[in-house]
Length: 558
Ligand code: ATP
Ligand code: MG
Image (cartoon, rainbow, N blue to C red; front, side):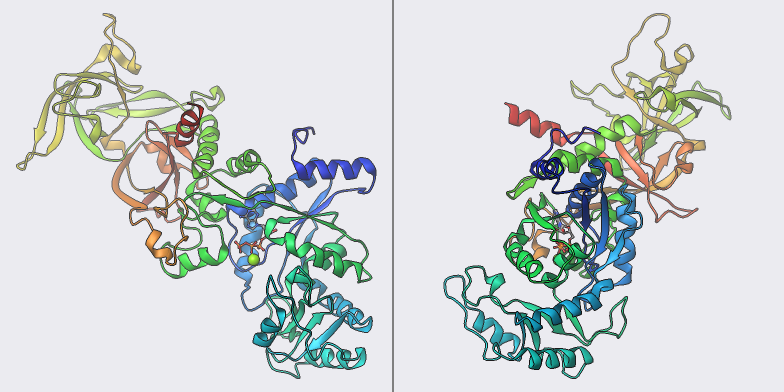
């Protein structure tokens, strides 16, 4: 496989390690903390870790960093696995949990204590903070720093036994309180937490911190390249110090890349959780959420997300990607793959006066002009139809080529029709169009006299149509960089969801399978929503047809 050739700095490093023989076989891992649902930022990391493993013939582990039971839940463990699998990746036998290593981590902590490189500290959290110093001032040694290894071991075992309350003591690495890197000022390795763990239950009263679990888990699993986001660069010296001072089976290398930021979006589980809890959205998988489950429900195909991850590439400095690029990836893929259907979102009734009452016929409609193998389907046509309300104007301006009084247009796959009269209700609203059709234009073909029309409209047969609810979405936030101020609520877009009822769909859409995204001709891409019931079909708009990204590119080129 040679799509690694263009590559990026991570792939360059891996290729060099393989060439030099310092790496025999690539092992990566995706290490989520199960404290929320995955978002599109995680997809970048997933595509990178599983992607390089795949490209270089290695393996990628899925490892839960489940070291903070106070915030973690089985629901998240399950959703994360579902999302990674849906994105198209497979961890094989390599499903791991940091909690599987708790016993080993405890032994290693004892090893550090015995070698005089860790100690139990009785300072409170506030005192530890005060002793830590600042970016410009060195920290101060804790008065408990010089405890003997024996005393430390005994206290640490008592911490494990549950002899002390939460927060009474911590285990710290003994490194350097005056280090320029605050992460090296005797970082906390273990804290007391009398909280049941989703997997280990009540067996532990102490839990390791991220820094004493992540690199250690990497080493236990034989990870070769530990890829994480830039905010961990300052932790790398600690990552290395710990592995250098433990009898670890190997010493993986950590590399950092820039995290994904996306316009109109917040990518942080904590803040996404807040949106759910404050009721700004209907759950983690609300189609407006940038979560993998939200994007899936919105109808964005997994392949479009993988394509997006590839296009944004990898860099070592932070930047923000346009949301429109994600939509562009979806649109480009769906244009090739999505079945075309006809649906009328804002129906206006049309009566074809010269079409026989009570009769109907089936017309041939192409499923996907971009894909011959998708074939065609039959669409019913009859005397009463629906067209889109804004495809008619009583007094059309110059550039409006669609239907108006006395005008002729093509109904896609059907006939040329001419509008004879617009019927209004008492308040002057147009409620119905009376039209005639030309039987010689069956299939939407030009008549023998060669007459042409300037517009082709979509339509559905009223008697055969399936009524449905259609949900249209806009950005969840009005700001390109939401949450920059103090209050997230200030940036919320009050019009991010519009619900249309009594939309009229061609009959084939009643059987659209869950998980498939289709094109409503002239309108955009839509998918059935899981809220659908036999009595109320619900569709989501995935994206419209108008390509904002293409416009941005064009402007940039100018
Ligand atoms: P969040 O702030 O959303 O909770 P996190 O980094 O705390 O994110 P983890 O579950 O610890 O979430 O992340 C798992 C992996 O995903 C980490 O390696 C992390 O670097 C990566 N990751 C998280 N957010 C992004 C992002 N926006 N872009 C790229 N990678 C990300
Ligand atoms: Mg986190």
